[in-house]
Amino acid sequence: MARMDITTVERAELAAQTGATDALFELGLMYSTGRDVEADLVTAHKWFNLAALRGNDAALEYRKELANEMTQEHVAEAQRRAREWLTTH
Image (tube, rainbow, N blue to C red; front, side, top):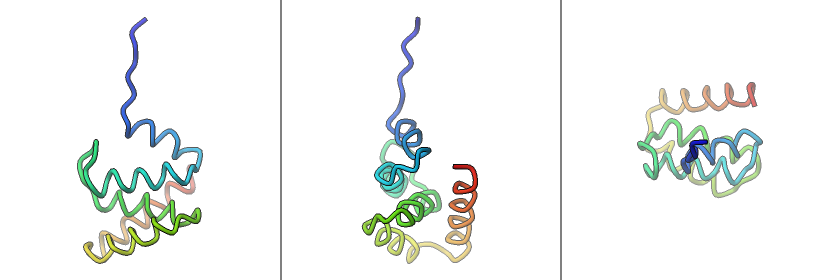
């Protein structure tokens, strides 16, 4: 049987599906810095937003910092993606 390697991002996404605040925050860090994934501020903002909703104060601060670097349209897109994620998880 072939061994299936799971990436750090995949591991974090699986944990995030359970609503694990630390995993949501970790995904925000990964996407904001481009660690193990291509940097994507909209996606990072989405994950920080979700972590902040679950009480992660650091995520709230990171989300605010990212928003200052983003257009209003990008922030709106990130918020839309967070709402969509919440309806499916």
